[in-house]
Image (tube, rainbow, N blue to C red; front, side):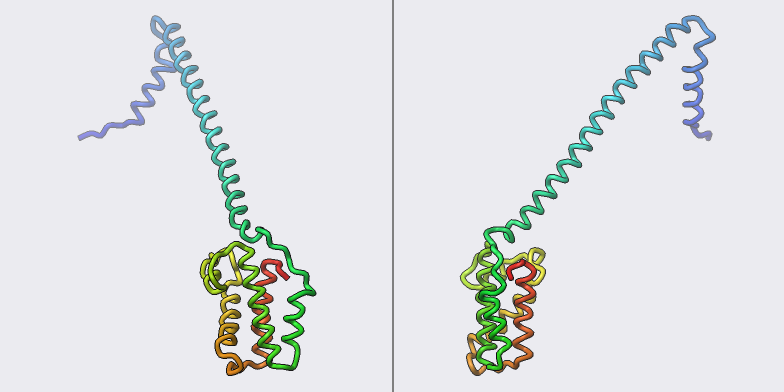
Amino acid sequence: MQSLNIEYIFQKLYKLITEGFSAGPGTGEIKNFVNIVDNILTFIFSIIAIIAITVILYVIVRKMEMSQEKAKKLSRPLEADIEPMRKNDRWQKVLDHVYSQNPSDWRLAIIEADTILEEMVTRMGYKGDNLGEKLKSVEPSDFNTLQDAWGAHKVRNKIAHEGLNFQIDHREAKRVIALFEKVFKEFEFI
């Protein structure tokens, strides 16, 4: 059984259209017909190309607009009414407490830093009855230092619940304050 050679058929049709009709009668009519069909197809494909280019440009522009909207949306909680604290106000008091030689001051520094953190998170628009609930509502991709905030807050909770029974050394107190500082610096809050 012989197979059908499509390429051969197309070559013969092409040769017939371009060369074959030129030898016979009515050659001018066929060439005119071929020219008209060629012009119509050129016009149709030109319109399709213009429409395709327009659609592609629209999609590119719309994608850029959506990216900008998304960036604004993600940064909105961070920009919303957050005024950077002056470096020499409450944060300086926290630092003074943590660098004192009195262990009670170290605890006080951690509690005060936690209070500052809660104010910052509240100003960012996160909701909850306490700092723990607010931190739970934070999207990790919006808050790079979220784990640092949790670590520091957990130490503050131990101080608040255990009081003087919670033993903390100077090195640990400075480490916890460094966690708070890392969080505040991410959002330019200090």
